[in-house]
Length: 146
Image (cartoon, rainbow, N blue to C red; front, side, top):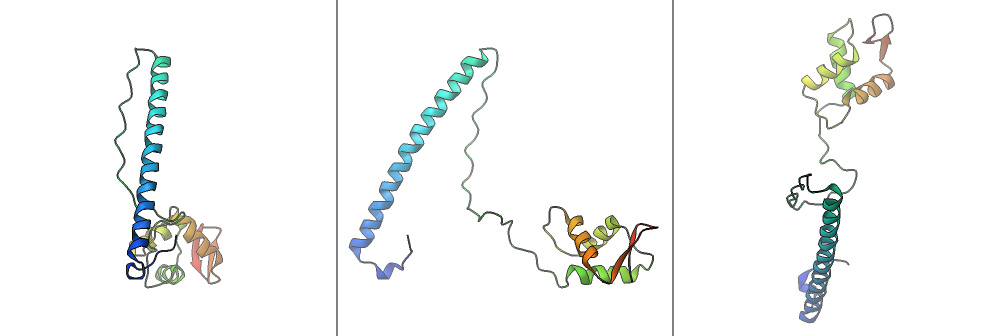
C-alpha cells in the first residue's frame, strides 16, 4: 500500500484505513492465540514423552521488538579517509623488510582503518594479491613493495 500524506486523504478514507488496520490487528491476534494453543499442546506432548523426572524448560522471555533490517545489511559502512590499498602502501613503505599477512592486518587496524568485515584478513589478502605494486617474497613469506 502506497503511503500518502495525511492532508491528501479525506476523513472517509482515513476512517477506512483505520478500519483496515483494526481488522488486521484482530486477525493477527487470533492467529497468535491459535499458535500459542498449538505450542502449548506441543509442550504437553514433550513433557509426556520426557517423563516426570526431566525438569520442564523455563519459558523463554518475550523478545524485545526489533526494527527490521533489509537482508544482507550489517549497518552503515564505515568511511575511511584513505583506501585500503593506500594504507597498505603507506605501511609497506615504512617497513622495507616486508610484513606477514597477520602483521599487515594488525598494522592496518592499529593505524585506525575502520572495518566491519568478519574476516578482515581475507580482505587484506585480496587487496595485496590484486595490487600491482606489492609482491610476496616466497623465501621469507612477507609482502613487500616492488
